Length: 68
Image 1 (cartoon, rainbow, N blue to C red):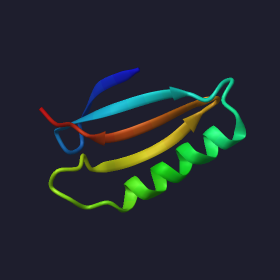
Image 2: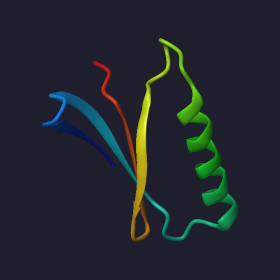
Image 3: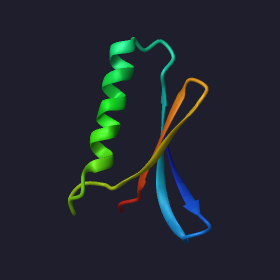
Image 4: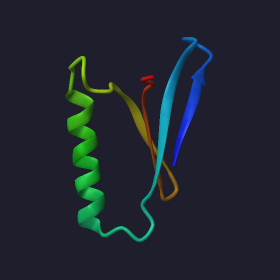
């Protein structure tokens, strides 16, 4: 699921992606976490910027910049 979120502190829009880890194999979770680590390091005008990620129980939440 993808949500549009508004940060009051910066007055900016971001996108929040929720990914269920339930039922995923360890290898799939590991690959997903490695992709996040790579995405965090990318800096390019044609790539959506990574903001942060966190876990809520078995849900991975990724926050990225909003692009129209």
